[in-house]
Amino acid sequence: SGPRRAYAGAARDYVLGVRMMDGKGGVLNFGGQVMKNVAGYDVSRLLAGSLGTLGLLLDVSLKVLPLPAEELTLRFERNESDAIAAMNHWAMLPLSLSATCYHDGVLTVRLSGAPAAVRSVRQKLGGDIVEHAQDFWRGVREQQHAFFQDGASLWRLALPSTAPAVPGRQMIEWGGAVRWLVSDVSAASLRERVAALGGKATLFRSVEASPEANWEPFHPLSPAVLQVHQRLKRSFDPHSIFNPGRMYPEL
Image (cartoon, rainbow, N blue to C red; front, side, top):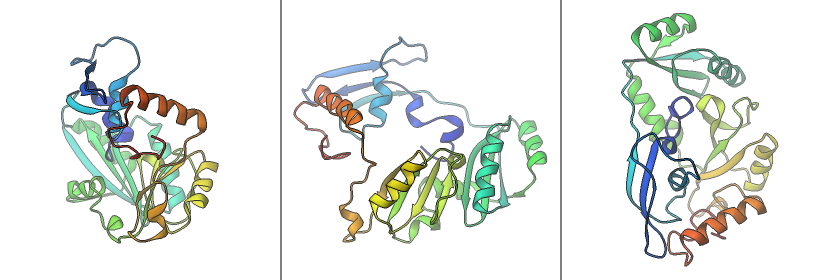
């Protein structure tokens, strides 16, 4: 999910239903093609985050939304702590926020909605208007921004949005809930620090032939949660055909 995720929902929230092939060759249907659906375990959302480890998706039904009538991007000069505080404060107000991003002393905010609402929020917040903002947000979403281009190991930290600043060179999205960190600190040390803040650390990209290349990419699971993952894997893919070890060696 891109920069809009914290304000519009994740990609999985827009999956209405799927048709899939499991590891036994069976074709299964979950969900539907309209918003109204029966209650139960939402397998469609589960499959959206499974990285192809549970089966082969054959068809996906998606909910779509209309494009906003108007969008405007503003920039503010802030230090990291003030930027995190501002993003959390604005999230509690009836503003037309659709994306936030902090990097290198600059907080960038996108407003989306009806023209009158966007103009009203712009007057309340102030800030400088960013020209060619679509290019900026595309660079963040597709990781083409200069921050992502130095070839160093990249961590994705999922944290409570109100968590204090984490040391290191980083880009902060989703109102403070996702922080991209460039760091050569050991996986154990970083994950211990992030866990103490109530979050998780994923090694999103490692440098080839570096010590990081041998680290597990995903934050370790507790034994109870790992058992749930293993039972799901055995249910959908008992012979471990689909992407074995893609997420964890035990799966």
